[in-house]
Each structure stands twice: as C-alpha cells, then as structure tokens.
Length: 425
Image 1 (cartoon, rainbow, N blue to C red):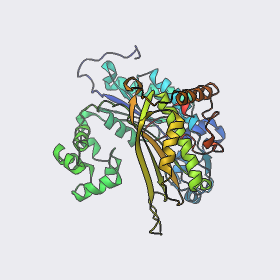
Image 2 (cartoon, one colour):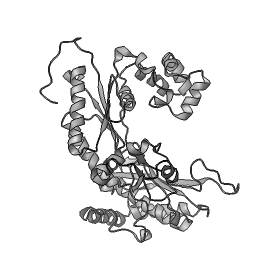
Image 3 (tube, rainbow, N blue to C red):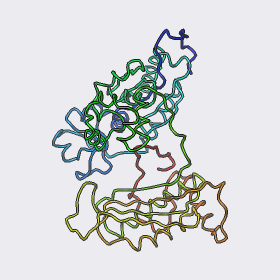
Image 4 (tube, rainbow, N blue to C red):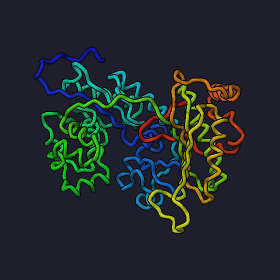
C-alpha cells in the first residue's frame, strides 16, 4: 500500500470498500497497442478470419458504427465498410494481462481476478476514504497507460464489489464512477434493468412478469420477494448487494471438473475430424489435470449438430449428443483416450459443429489412493511428454499419434470467467 496516503478523521469523508477495474475493449485495445497502425481505426476481433463468424470484441472506433461483441462479420462490414478484421491472439492478451496485474499491484493488492479484463481490489484502512480511493484509481489508470497509450480502463468505487463492478460499467471508456452507500438505492434508479449486473434477458422477462420494469421498482422489493423471483438465495444476496451491504462470497471450493470445448471450423465438420479435434481437447485437459496435481474419476463428451439458437429442419437429426462414464481414477493421457474412444463409438454420424470434453469427479493427489491395476508406465510417459513440451515451450511438440495433423485445430481460447495460464498455449 502506498505510504503517502493522508490520514483523515473518522466521519470526515465518506468511505468505499471496493475498487473494480474493467479494461475497455480489451482484445481490440491490445491489438491497437501492439500494432500502432491499428490505432484510431475501427477493429473487430474474431476467432477465425471468416465472414461466417462473429466479433469477439470491437474497438470503440468500431462501436461508433454499431459493431459490438457478437456482431457477425458480414454485418460488421456493412455497418463499417472500412473495419479491420483481426484474428485473435489469446496468448498476447494473457501476456499483457500479466503486465497490467503487476502495474495494478504496485498501487493496490488485487483481491480477485474475475476474468482476463476485470479485477477487484478490496480497500483497507486509509484506502477506504473517498479522496484516497479516488487517488488510487487515477494512479492505477496512469500505471496502465504507462504500459501503453492504447490501453484504457474504467474504474468503479463502491461499498461492495458487486456495486463497484456496476459502477465501472456505467462510464466507458476510461471512466471513474463512485457509488456511495448513503446515496443508495437512489443512485441506481437511472439505470435500466439490463444494466444491473446479473440481470440477463431471461431474468428481465421474469421480472417484467412480476410487474418490475425499472430499477426503482426492483430496489423497492423486499429481500424475500427477490429470493422468490430468482428462485434461489442469489436473489436475496443481490438485494443486500444493491443496498450496499458487503456480503462475502462463498469461499472457492475445490475444482470439480476440467472442461475443454471448441466450435469446429468447416473443414473439421465430419465425425472423423471432430473425433481428432476432441482428442486434442482431451490431451489439453489431461495436461491441466496433471499440472493441478489431480486425478479424474469421470470423463464425458458432448457434440452439437447445430449452432446455438438455430434449428435443424430434419426432425430425425438431434440438436446434440453427449455421453459420460465413471472411471477408475487416472490422469495419464493414453488411458483417458481409451475411455474416450469407448464413449465416441455411440456418437451419431451427423454433421458436428461443436465438440467438448470434460473430466469430472476430480480428487487432489494427496487424497488419491493408488489402484492395484494402475499403469505406472503410462503415467511416466505422460509426465515425460509434459516435461519435453514445457522445456521447448510448445504445447504439443510431442503428442500421441491420434492428434497428428491437428496443429491448427482447437487453439487455446480465453473463457469469459477465467484466465488460462501461459503454459496452456
């Protein structure tokens, strides 16, 4: 914590409990930072450079034309004919994120990394006084700008992390918004229901059915009413958050599963090619399993035969297929592949567009008991492959034969609510 923060008398200034930071148009901003020729130009980030996909992110210059996350590339080019379509580089985004985290922690410890472009910091002691919290916010902004002028962030200051995130969303780009407990709930009344963190389109419809169409009406509900509408304790928890209470989140439990999934490029949309892509996903999951020093006691696979929200006209073709099975605890890739092949035999021979695998019922190594039929040679081979790939910093330099020719398939992506390790690339 910076030592130069002044001391204030209790009650002299209002206080806030959290600082939430949201990196603005992060993927596009990193590309503009890394490639100066893109600065000031509309940019759309895509997973694969094809007109049939959609934008993962858009720069603010592109947003000015109506291009946003989820906009199809064809539509983006109509809205903004001079848009620059750039293929995503997830590893670069994670590398920049690590620099940004270091810059933030030079000013304030990070309590939680929510995603690759969001972090929350709990304020303590003198940091809670509003003048000091505001000063810290601007210092963090400057520290990020020192990494690169194209990088910007919005910051929210509030009594709890939920409202701090809400505040950060209210003023983009490059904003700093304050929500004080003494101003609640009136400070939220100007928002739309969909602006409230955690209210999706489906939840908005549910609220509307209960006669709630504005945030003012939402804030007038009792905690019990919100619990009943949500159908879970989350509704009651949100009531306390919206009223400025700093309810602690449940402590993170032990990881229960590892999942990998991928939307197939057109050339991989056959049962045989999807099988090989799934083997690569399984290999990635197995490597992560060993890195976490855990064992899996279950394996599953899922395949989609239609894109989300689209219907298949042939009623005889299902929208998807999935299967799973319990297994003896293992973590070597070859044994996991054997189990996967048995599952895959029942996969229908339709045109797949998405495939995913997951390992579940995980147990930490310290709780694992060696089985009588465990194949130590297979595990030794898997660990040897891991060491070679780590040494040469290539994820699949050494791999099993079933993945041959899959070099460009299923590259590591960045999920919404977690950040992959650089070792995953």
